[in-house]
Length: 440
Image 1 (cartoon, rainbow, N blue to C red):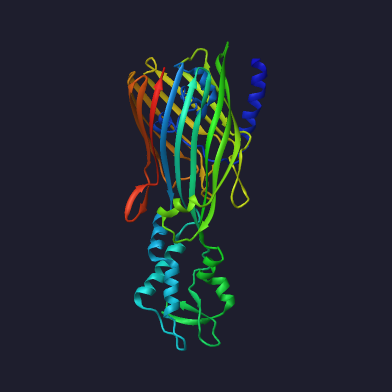
Image 2 (cartoon, one colour):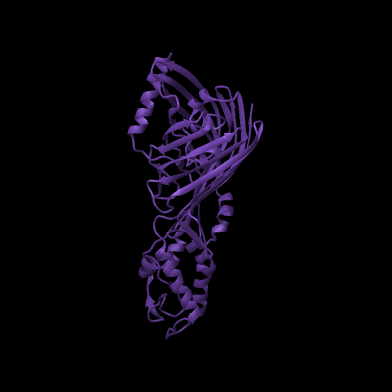
């Protein structure tokens, strides 16, 4: 039996590790992992084993563990402040004001100072938005259950993203006129005057054309699904050490989001726009994992998991598909002083796509857990996205306290690099989570 299981599992893991195909981002959820730099593949031995590595179900410390948790993450990349500045200016209203100010005959005068300033600001903001930009909201909610070597639950994971697409070749203010024989005029910011234009220049250079034809816009996209797993793990004692193999079958009902909206929509209104862009459907996923503890080093352990090896697919309201491609993650853990201290490290072994174009996720991180008493747990750590540098190092922390049958746990993450919104600084990446845990 052992030989058959191993011969099936190992080729799958080797294949996934050898293919650098991108995948949807591995979401860091669960009170321990959130606060320990994302580490979980070799240490999540309770209710979150099903999510991080189903093989860890064979390493359970309690006959039953149930956790109820909720959290939210936020990532901002070069977008929040420019979009809200554009919302304050209101591009369409500015263009309407220009059209109302236009004379009905030659000569063509310039614009009032305040309106000219708005035009300059709009062009400067649009031209300064980098191609890689986005605002991503990542809420989660989970009911996780471990019963002996079995795992069940509801793992709700969401990624809702808005990013700007700007046609930087079309930023000129070119509008139609009512002047006889002259259909279009262009506003020259440098000289503060209108000059004659034509249809060809309007189509090639006009900001209004780019807005009307969907060449400059905010794209809303994302995926929110609930993974409903049935998982099991089996333990094998060999002369080389202890080996656990596990797997999970996940039913995945979910919503996809796909919509274009105006470039000057306020960032706070993006969620409302997402509510009108949903498509509901159901997919399924398959996870496999292994856990290994060497014979002569029983404090040392290794974990490896491959999630969504079948590439679950979700339809969108635009007729396209969103794929959750395979994710592979490995980890190592070491216990000290009778398991009072645990050191852990995890690493994404695949370069994972996010919903922000050309922005990739591949985290390496770890932390320490100190549990001096059964009713108290203190944790800390850090993690780093080795594919991108916009948010810097992400520090993590958390603690849990309470009786074995009822514990409260809080965990959080925050990045060293800051974003800007309304003149205030905030972490470019952050996450908080609260959980109630019961062990029996």
